[in-house]
Structure formats: C-alpha cells, structure tokens
Image (cartoon, rainbow, N blue to C red; front, side, top):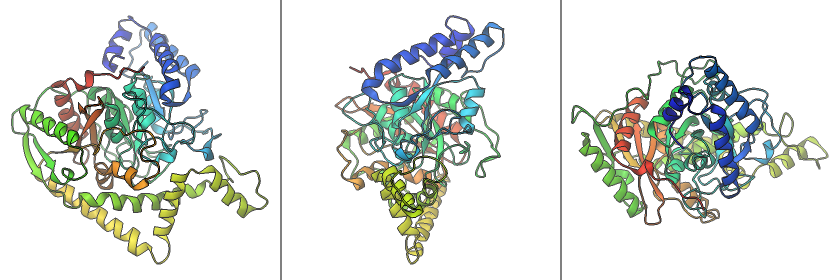
Length: 486
C-alpha cells in the first residue's frame, strides 16, 4: 500500500476514489485475516460510509486534509461509539461504548476511514498478543511467530498493509516492541501529548496512545492528527503542536550539531548478537549522516523492569476494580448473592495474565507492603527519570535496541511470565520517565525477521525524533521490504 501523501495526491487529482481505496483495504483484510487474525472487528459498512463522505467533499470542490479517505486500524481498547470495545477480554465481550474516545473522534473529524478494531493482549497486558481472549495474531513475516504486544494487531495490520496506519497504546513498550517485531514505525509520544480520554485504562500514569506507520512520515502525519490539549483529560498538556511532517529532511546539517548518545547499559548480556550488530551499524549510519556520537550511561536503566512490575500492576488493580458485573460488561449467571457475583464474574471474565497482575498490584498496595514495594518503586522511578535528565544535558537523542531479540515463536514463552516480561526491558524506562520514543526498522536477522532501532527524545521533542528517524530511514531500504504472506 502506498503512503498517506501518495494516496492524498491520488484523491485530489481524482485518479482514485476514497471508496476504491477503502474497498481495496477491506478486500485485503478479508483475504489475510484467516491467517493473520489482526482484527477483532471489521467495520466495513461504517468505513465505506466515511469514504463516501470524503468522495462527496472532493466532488463538491472542497479541500481535504492528508488523512481524509485513508484506511486506519484502531486498537480495541479505544472507545468507539456504537462499535464494540472489548479490550481483548471476555469481561467486556458485549460492551458497546456510548461515547467516542478523543483520538478516534479527531480521526473521524479529519476524514480518516476506520476499517476495524485490532486485536491486543487482554487489557493491554502482554508482549505477544497471545493473552487476547479471542484469538492469537500472527506475525506477517513468519506466521508461526508473534507480532509482539500488546498492540500486536495494529502492528501486524500495518505491516501486512491491511490498513495504511493504525493507533496503539503504549504502557511499557506496547507500541514500540510490536513495531520492532513487525518491521514498521511505532511512536510513543510524551506523556500527556495525546489525550487518554476514551482509552480503557491499564496503568494511568504510564499509558499513552501513539501511531503506527510503514514510514516515519506516515507516523508523523497520524500523530499530528491526534496530538493536542483535551480538557476531558486531566493529564493533557496545553502546548503548541508543531507540524511534525513539515520539517523532515534527509540528513543533519550543519554536521556535528546533532548529538546522539548510545545507552551503554542496553548492550551486553541478554542482547542477541544479531540485534547488537544491526543497531551498531545503524549508529554508524547516523554518524555518516552528520550526527556526533557519544557513549552515555543511565545506571538505573536496568531497574526499570522491576519498578514497572510494581507500579503498573498496582495501578491496574485499582483501575480494573470497576469490572464487577454490576455496571457494564460480563456478569456471571450462576451467582446467588452479591459477593459470589463479584468473585465469579472476575474469576471467569478475566484471563490468567490479568489476574496475575491484579494480584501482584493488590499485594504491593496492601497494608505492611505499600512502603516496601510501591513507595520504593516510585522513588526508583524518580531516579530513572533523573538519569535521563542528566543524559539529555549531554546529548539530543538517545539510541538503543527496541527489543533484545527478534520475534519469538508463538507459545514459546507463555509458560514463563518472567521470560515474557524481559521483552520490554529496553522500552519500559521511557514510560516511567514520560519521554517520547520511536522504533523503526534497522535490519533483519538470518530468518528474515525485522530488527528495531529505538530512538528516545527529551520531553516534547517528537519533532527531533521524527527528523532523526526520517534521515536514517531515507538513507536505508529497510522500510521498503515487505512481508510475503503465504
């Protein structure tokens, strides 16, 4: 599938209609879904109606924005009015939101065409999309492997060209890790840049919505559409939003003005040698484009994982208390009193991973353990943030691998939660610090699986991340390689 800008030019020149573009995407979804399982819900009727509205505007001589008529996938933890929002969980199997999330409303206002709701790990808890209550999404590059998680459905849909771009959410790496596994671009914005209104909460101080695209420019265009202040979100930032796509250029001039830091703690034990080699070559390429390279130490980076797995489950135990069978969602039918209704609803409605994290969080917040675990984790979170602040006093952008490995086989880690959690080792510290971060392809392993390069920026420097990523992307051909799904 061609880029947003190319499709836009075709539309305004009337070479193709929005309905034709949408129909093509829907036909591809129909052909590939029996193998990929990227979508939980395909909204064909609504998509064609939205596309028809765009065509009518063009016929009337009205100007349209870049996203008008562009097929978009939406992660199924973003509320869509009148369309089921399940969060990949049985407990929300029949939930149809009575309101629209801010980001999906912004996309609708921009004329984007929603082709469906994408699969995810239940309540965004997982790194492989194997924790969905409904189906396991396959990696388009190798159907026997996982696409990453929790936004695996969105990443796989973009990689397989079932849609042009997609939205995901990132709590500890849930956009960037699947972007790495599926060979696409994925961005986690600065915390508060994008409204979380209508995003079903997992860990409220960490969750952030962001874009997937096949190119850096596509991701930048999508972020521009969803970023901005929202009075409905108390954590939303009231800051000016630059035009991210307008400032993209192929190199860094004058040379030596851009300082890039390599986080030394992200290399060594636990990192696949093929990933290390690809990232090292990518750094060399950035240097050849005019960047000045520095080795940077973030000594508490390695404490991100244990810190996250206290803070995130603690917030989840509070956020998921609302699913009790009373107000909405699934209710156990065999309960004979209020207490048994609560317990049976939660026991049968939640999956294993969600129960595990609720129990961890409840324990960490309980009397006698709050100070020992949760409070201490928050103190370490502050130290991690301070490490990043010191690093950005020396460099403009930080670089490290997105994931320690390429995509693993489906079922390989399902019985070993700790091994699964290690997949987010490189991405979690960014969420704890509230920073923007982007993953883009930087190579392939011997099995032909994509490898991701992670770029980390200072607060609200998404523009700089996109510039660095675009310059690297345009000097390589990794983004031009596409999976051959058989």
